[in-house]
Image (cartoon, rainbow, N blue to C red; front, side, top):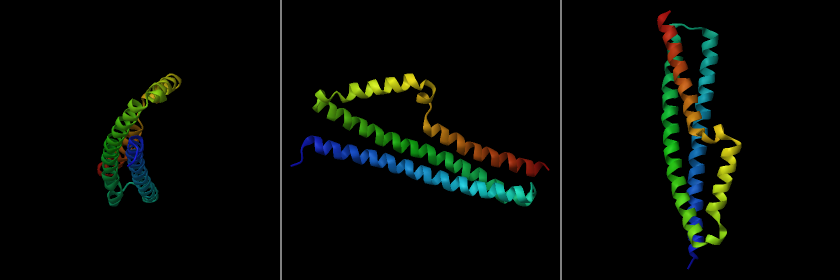
Length: 149
């Protein structure tokens, strides 16, 4: 029978891999959206702001909103996996207090927050949400400009 620590480590590794997979999926989706938007903006730059270009600008809004929702969902899933991994880490720490895992991690977090106070508080998912929001907002503004002229 497997040692308790081996079982906990296997579960911990599974949670970390699931978290990594969610981040990779988010990155891939964002890359696809950015490539599509870039192509659309290039096409728009060639043709100008005319009514027929609403077929380019309106999907920008939809893709931006979809990107925001996907980033938020990805963050929710990552938080779920990280909470499980944290619980497992704490369980390992309880079984082997001599490793001082939690104290060491607390020290590292403190040093990191002291060295990078603003960046340590900035959430990565929020930056991705802002990027996708700008895409949606840009599409809305361009669509508005087309409709007004």
